[in-house]
Image 1 (cartoon, helix red, strand yellow):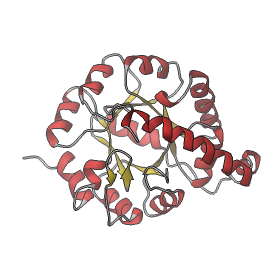
Image 2 (cartoon, helix red, strand yellow):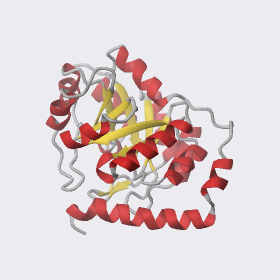
Image 3 (cartoon, helix red, strand yellow):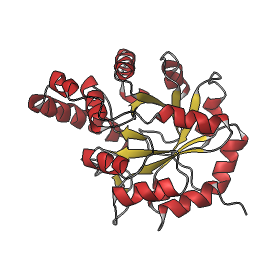
Image 4 (spheres, helix red, strand yellow):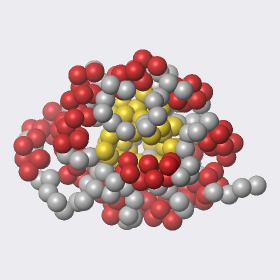
Length: 267
């Protein structure tokens, strides 16, 4: 598989995956399972509170593997990672649930969320309302919508449906064209991915450049490529206080200690 086709391959597999899931449990039946058992923990509110205080809002990711890097962590345990992150200053958690390409699963989300009190985003490739209902049923407090993976009509439909289910939305962009599309949505969280999803190369200037075009009031989350305390300091010096970090943490011997090192230890 070439890097340029990774996203296309993921989306093709996701379509067949959703079709199979719908044949087992209909959307109507899934919606009926969404009750008051799982109250939202306020994903966007938690981010907003930190950013308003000019403090880092860290979305710490629990990720076992990726198509570009392969297996990232052998001693993978979502429960341990969730508790570790929570004890070391994470604001929220991000859980990869894609199975084929990221070796994730829905159970990981439920296990991680049950292990702590942090709000959780389901990190997957959302292309259908069915997945959003599924996310709510699983207990996710937020979902990810990737502009590069969706038509504008889909973005509007899915973000509206998420609002109806009271689940927050992180809209992810990588370039100016995608940003313009994202700004048409009535959503508060904006993720700027420094990784090009077609080449999988990263450039931190992506966030710094695009952030200048974002209106006040949007909560900016920089994603991918943050590896050092200097990277963090650079972002915060430009007014970027929201971070989604996965691989830098998951490759560390102690992910929580790495979080502390990047964000809370000076000198």
